[in-house]
Length: 478
Image (cartoon, rainbow, N blue to C red; front, side, top):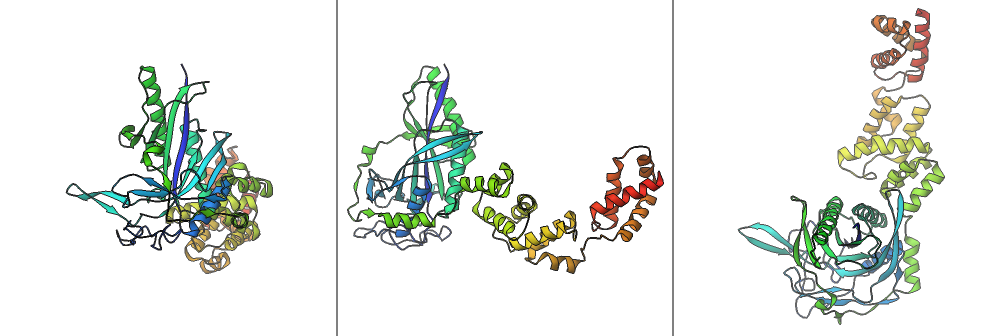
């Protein structure tokens, strides 16, 4: 019997509001433990929450980007459970009336597009952070994270493979970063993904019993955990066993999932409306204001780059991976650079410089106008491609204009035919074995001779002129 996987994803996104969702405490992740706290986020008796409007704005922005319906009237609810990281013994969340619902996201995966339904995107407060590495067998709780704005995005069970889940998460993260609602830093817990996984005989309609896999630190880890869990469930069924609805953890070192606890149901949390917060009313004017502020999202922008700039689909995909890279590319082209040449420099040498410096494109002092100017200097024959690499590195480090760098370092390309011919004649005199090989019909050796001329001129020779003049001089020797 063949089986197929049925997967739904739950993603928790910490929104980058400067203050917490129900109090004015800072959300700074790097603050010393238990310093960004107050009676509200510590759950002190008698303290009252006040809704952070910025959280609602950003949640609506995400909902619109995911094609959701925005509730005109929604509310907050109390989700009751006990855990050391929950001072109040309840979490303020949303239950039956989420802010955003009934959306979808078209996910490009393995050459096809799958429409993944978005069941809901609801607001809640984050919990505190438990730390189990204090030593002497002791644990601690840091309440700095308690009350940080959190948006939970829940999909329909529309995903059918670990690869599709990975692609969904990657493209969702891209959208969130384009919207500038979260830094999506998984190491700091700004983005946390949980997979609900079941299997069923291929072609059947009923869902199997699902398990939820939590505590995975990366998208690649999530992909591996899903793959393992699919295989585990299939093997259990083939062995005559029964899948138990439970929460499972992921052990990255052993590459396995393991049972943590039986999965709770909604009634276990005893939800009821939060009595200390008024309902949230997002009218048409409010929604329209957020809609008008939305940036162009990655997929539409990628297709526009292909159409407007005539660049290959791969280039458009890479250039739109981040909003900062896409913005930099468009600004470079607007400054006069050829689109394909700009794409090559940005995707290649410039990205390499950013990676080496551990900086995002857009954080450096290099301006798009200067990159465009450098590309024009190459086209005009003022500098060679080899010299341009040196110029780009200096532009990246100092922010100076390319013309200034070329003048200061004496990097002007040699395009004087007499000067080049002199260097070429010297190279031919110094490399007689290669000259003889060329005369014997081994024309590939000309590449070696070009390289020697470039070396002799410290990379300043005009490569096109070197090729032409070198062939002229060699023909005289034939």
